Length: 250
Image (cartoon, rainbow, N blue to C red; front, side, top):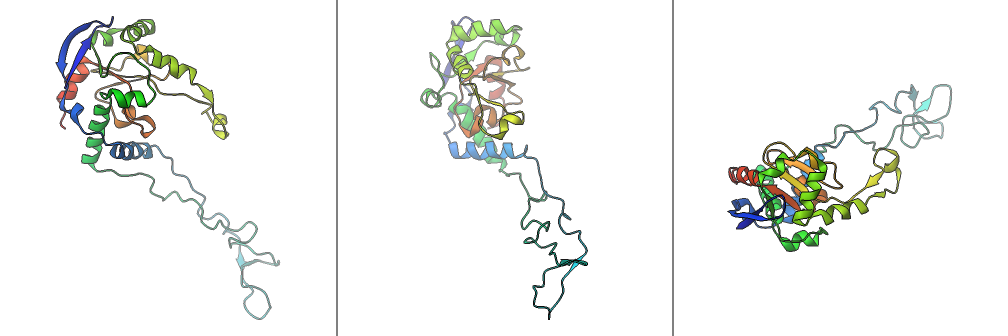
């Protein structure tokens, strides 16, 4: 599979061969499994105090009094400790011992990443995800992109290659969330737009654009390529990122 290397002004410089990862079969089931496994590493365990509701010195009255055998407070007839009692323990409370991490095999994880990489080169799937652009995927740019220091220079480059419409789409999608989340630091929701993958350091000048994520090829993971478990994200690769990707094991 081949791709055209573009300059910052959108001109075709040369044509290169893409690594074998771009020929991997599309497996949305594996991609979803890998993304959920990655997200589960961020789950925060939570649970009640193990002794909540059972610290009262309550004992049952035993038989012969025509009353149930539930534990009752001393010098009182009020039940305690049991779930049906006021102030008693919870029946099935959340426990911090619960295993939240979803495991995945190494080969499945590698296959999912390769499949997500291949999906970025499928024009039909990328457009079906809602991305707006002109031209064909994958977008491979020269390493000059990594040397840009100002956001306006990145914007000019994205306009030249025909993907800036997707960033405008993301900016217009910003909305206030319903529910309690907006009171807990998660006030807005917004569509994802372009992912910029570089060979060495992440492109700092592009990370402030609406919906844009930046990462190096070393830190690239399946969640970058398939946010929300939905693969085929619009991705811009630099030439050095493609070179380093070719050196990885399949």
